[in-house]
Image (cartoon, rainbow, N blue to C red; front, side, top):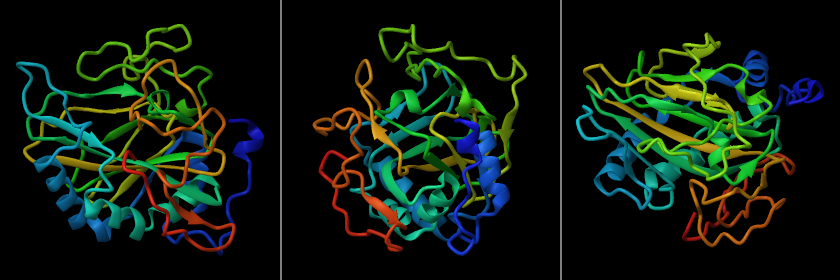
Length: 294
């Protein structure tokens, strides 16, 4: 991000959502991550019900992320909003799109995908340090993920390396279970750092159910295991803004979205990735339809 982009004026206060202050916007631009208290506070029950449904009937991308002998359970799954009504209701009816627009400085907000991550009590496995962007086929200055727990979290909260969205080289993507590299050619990626050992500035917050951490797709992030006596269920929504474009990667992306038909430089197709908010006409587009593979 250039100094000019960091200094781009924020949306006028008359359009800013009440949950968003100038401090939120400044912190998001400087650090790439910020806590938004209570963003999903009115939707915790719906998210919890959707997670339960997801775990009872996992989708095609569901994964169990523990090796033999590791304790607990670490489940994740994504791209289920079309078949789990609670997820779609939360995405469309919460303030997440408006808050995203304010943080990104974007007139439009488009859904990329949803993600569920559950660590049962006694799960020792940490979420590996990674950036989301290298796994994806979309890039831009205007991207945001929201990570929301439906249980109180402290030690098992999300951890983000401040300023890592401005690093010159992206971090090598790896597979969480096997720890193999995600793409064959490692030359264009930087090795995965150890932020604690290297004394990087790590942001983390105790969170109540319904709070959300907003973070740029390029931010290095991870999480500790869940050594507590309660579950750590989290729901994440990935959104993109005006400048996000399709890019090619040297292999199958995650999520893959087979058959999408896009080429480098395209905006994400709105029939698969719905436009949730469009401030250009001061109205939301709630009627976009999505394809069966989204």
